[in-house]
Length: 262
Image 1 (cartoon, one colour):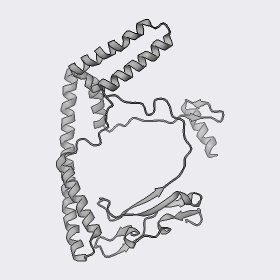
Image 2 (image 1 turned 180 degrees about the vertical axis):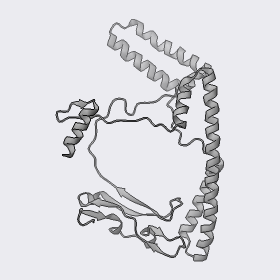
Image 3 (image 1 turned 90 degrees about the horizontal axis):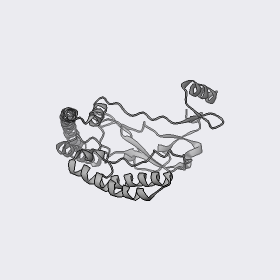
Image 4 (image 1 turned 30 degrees about the horizontal axis):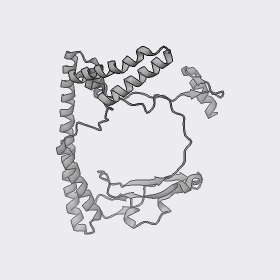
């Protein structure tokens, strides 16, 4: 199949120890094989720097993760002005003291607008005033990755990771069997702890939504509802015709796709 499609099996082109080639271990721990691969076109063969099995990855499966290091130059795409913009932590405005300092700082900055006559200058100074005030008084909103996970869960996750590391480095078959049993027990403990954290996190979010609704903070209610319903904001890439004109209607986009595949 690789020969017909001009592909390279990258896991067979780099010298590694056997344990960094093996990608599958049978449940009894006796049979080992290299059955998972990363394929790439021969045209981009030189972009692959290395491919090997991640024996230390803390994944509860009988296959090892395969990792490739790639170095490739891609064509730089023009980005819209909105992409990469700062998102300020506007939830701090719900605090009375924060809101007062923000308004006071904004009023002081807007005093310089009184002497300006050009609409463009007023607009530029207004945008600059809002951004600088928000940056200094509110700060950028930090992205939280699964904030509902408790410190106890992180502790058992770390313990499971250490068991995985010991299992990977062990050479004794008797010790491996013992470590596999301990790893299975610890894995169940991690899943149980995560389920409890997720349940408690959901209950806390519901309580927060009820409190926000009673205080009239509907933005917070909508955000929590979106998270609980697992609805993600969709992003669509602009599609252009052969002349570079952006296509807006669905029918025009379907027609352009048809032209592309033909």
